[in-house]
Length: 269
Image (tube, rainbow, N blue to C red):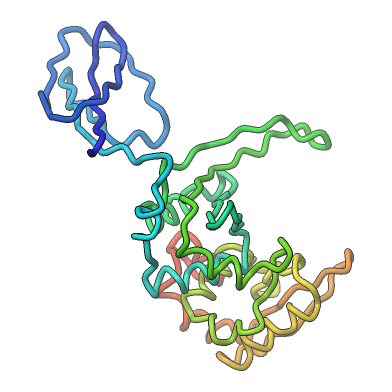
């Protein structure tokens, strides 16, 4: 049975009631009062002193095995996941199935919400902001916005491709997996635009030199981007997409990259 939520204002408070039918959809408020609604609350609308209450489905926190097996990924979703997993997306194997953990700094909240729109059907809840304790070195609070997916069998192939003994890797068949849309989301995750030299940097330090070389060769073989590798002071390796290849990159990605991230390839929104 589908569980539903009714939003009811009463005596200056907001009450959330589980119901199975829709008794009303319009409540007149006789006295104005302030309501503090949580972030990403999807079902409220004020107009003067009229409060419209909506009934919205509540997703279950856990799924049965039969429900888990009903989920599948489109080809576009698979291609996006390849790029995200080359970046900051974390996959976690829980018992038999895999879930994804999406985390971004609140600076990139718009991008995180864009990702949520793409994958919300696979999620049990909305994105949430997390405010950790101040950093011991800087004293600053680095807030993040995040959401998790369900643990699902349709995600297992990605865990098996991108993780070896719990450590993220670049798959040996990355040339077969990586498409332009995957590259777009890799740059969204780990790309930086160097304003002075006008080139793109891929922050791939978490991978081994052999893996970074494999990824750079893939970019060169597939799209002739003439990438090269720059070793960092801490022993890591980054991929540089040089300035003379940026027009090729922009032509490839400008129509498929999330608009709020176009600055990472040197284009205005």
